[in-house]
Image 1 (cartoon, rainbow, N blue to C red):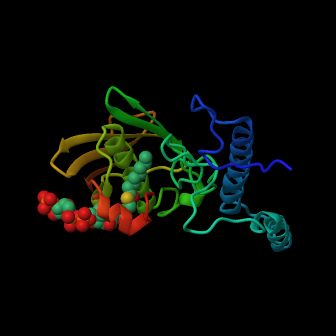
Image 2 (cartoon, rainbow, N blue to C red):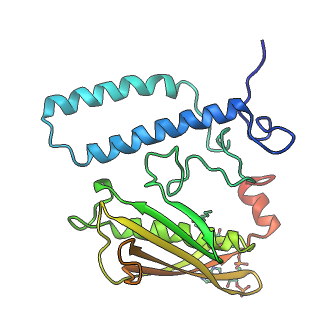
Length: 226
Ligand SMILES: CCCCCCCC(=O)SCCNC(=O)CCNC(=O)[C@H](O)C(C)(C)COP(=O)(O)OP(=O)(O)OC[C@H]1O[C@@H](n2cnc3c(N)ncnc32)[C@H](O)[C@@H]1OP(=O)(O)O
């Protein structure tokens, strides 16, 4: 019997393209992520009665069973991921396979990372607006993306967030992230959140310090490498 492997390196062909099997599995993971995302948002906004809610909870526990029968440990990377290729299916900000992720869709435009997303009611902090921690999460991601895209990847050691105005839910948002300063091992980046309709009015901004990880630290944190 042929052993089907979905490991990122096993699943790649010679030219670096993903195999059919891994593409199929990623598509299935995306499908599940989209269903979970809808479920999370509906669960945070439903006004259904107790009976319907209990029925849904029972159904969800039932469908979780087969998935839970085969799970990775913390020490294993998802087999559908391709770290070097930048594919992280379950990233809680951008992962299309993550029900937690809005997900943010981002790209580099003229040296600036520009992202879009819409936050549903599951992200509510003050009524009708986003939780402040969610804004910090989005900005940490945008700044991290910007540092990586600039060729200076590192980990966040400091993130200062300034909340100028509340971030509306169910409203298309525009996010930015850019590197402002590259020191020896440290990189400073700045990012913003605005609505897509009014991109010049900054609602939240953040400045972050990122530090390149020393090889010995990489070994201490991840063994041979993340
Ligand atoms: C594509 C999407 C990417 C998304 C990325 C998202 C980014 C993240 O969320 S990363 C997760 C959150 N961050 C973390 O968990 C990091 C926790 N911190 C650590 O593990 C360590 O501090 C680590 C590994 C980064 C650096 O450790 P180490 O190599 O020992 O650093 P160390 O030598 O003490 O310091 C290096 C420099 O950083 C500076 N520094 C360290 N901490 C801070 C800090 N909090 N503020 C400012 N500067 C700091 C030091 O002063 C030093 O600067 P200098 O060289 O000028 O003296």
